[in-house]
Amino acid sequence: MDIMLGTSMRVGECIGLRRRDVDMTTSPPTVIVNGTIVSNRTEGTYRKDSPKRSQQRRTIALPSMAAAAVRRRLALAEPSEDAYLFPTATGRSLSVSNYERLLRTFIDDAEPELRALGVPVDEYTTHLYRRTAATLVERAAGITIASRLLGHANEQITRASYVVSAEVVDPVTAQILDGILGS
Image (cartoon, rainbow, N blue to C red; front, side, top):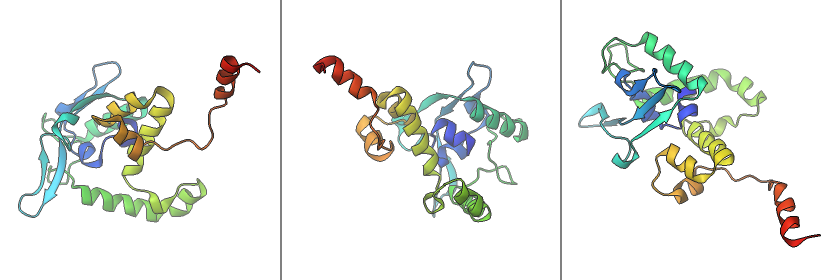
């Protein structure tokens, strides 16, 4: 959860992370989003060596909470460069459906606490992390940077599907208009 929230990665991109995709020696540490986990009937669950679309490859700087989570996963991972950070007992990648099942179990177990915090449990999915990260980055730094973080080629996709519009307009608009129009 911390890694998805801190990077806005899709769940398949996150569980597809391997030791080789992480650089903890840089400041801040980074992850390369260069693959995703997919499943189908003919091939089963496997790592596709590009994100959802190949042009969405990106290197993301890790905020502290995501870096701490990656460090914990690295400590548990096998030493191989191809070792997954989220492996099954046999060392293969976790599937998206298995992760989502684990998330539903977490939600069911923590439902009273989540509701007490104001979390809309009926809308709690892995995509919530992606939307939250996009909204926070857009509010602090603008739609262009949020769009790049998500790996979108078009800011309109980010604006239409990910960024939650603020219901209260920033009061600075009154100051701007006063400065232009006068009192």
